[in-house]
Length: 172
Image 1 (tube, rainbow, N blue to C red):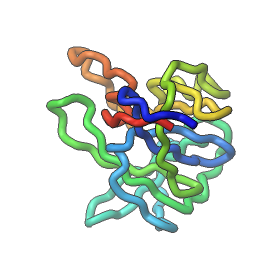
Image 2 (image 1 turned 180 degrees about the horizontal axis):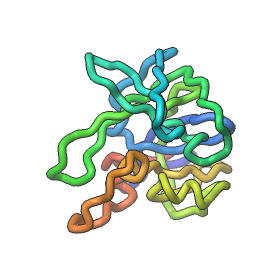
Image 3 (image 1 turned 45 degrees about the vertical axis):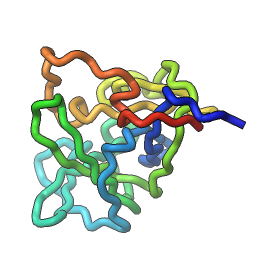
């Protein structure tokens, strides 16, 4: 049985479709929508070609399997994860959605030692900032700045893995 590690981290494991999973920081997940109604937006990249209307705002929705190039069809999202993030401490909070095939599962990260990205690794590099092992699976950590096409502010120091995952201290 694992003991709680005060230097550990809590995250959400998300099923994004076609057998792929990823991690997002615990504090990034703000809202879940069951069976969301998504709207296609013409002339947009396939990976972010749908939107969701939430509280009167139009929110972009990310489709990870399409961004990885493993399918040309949108994921049938049974759940939408509403996420909030800042690109640096002084930036405004941005909101986006991620299409999921199942509700997220809260995980306690026992050993956030780096792991190789799963296939297609080159595609994961475009949307992930790190990767670690969770059980027998490599779990890429999503980088919202990369995903939503916003260049990081190079004046800010890079975040540590624990900061990227929400600054919580727990273990699996």
